[in-house]
Image 1 (cartoon, rainbow, N blue to C red):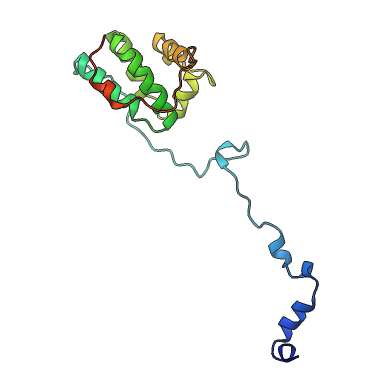
Image 2 (image 1 turned 90 degrees about the vertical axis):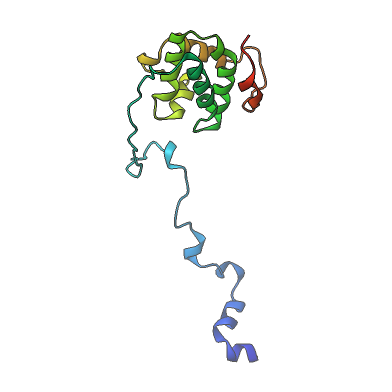
Length: 166
């Protein structure tokens, strides 16, 4: 009885059935959680577009420097999927590419501002713009199909950067 006289509110709560102890405002969710990027109703008004300088072909570098730069840029991407796909592709094909193919590959990996675009084009989830439809895109798409069923879970070790081309 001492509790009832000192804390009348607490005594009333303890006397109530358990289902009444939860506040109605707490029983419903007052906010929703979801990833807005995939929502068809997303207005994307909260996205910030960061302007990037236009891509320019580098005409002043040697073919060896271009290959080395493209090896590095293939490995250091904005997303892991492209890091794995492009670094393995570069390891396999870059040393055998002609200067024209190197320029096409340079444009492909450096002109688009969104790495997901490159990934979707390579995996044929989305069509590539006409400017990127070329022999290098065909090679990359064929590589992405992984016809030999190789295990591609991570980028190659860095030792391949120092190997002499065959």
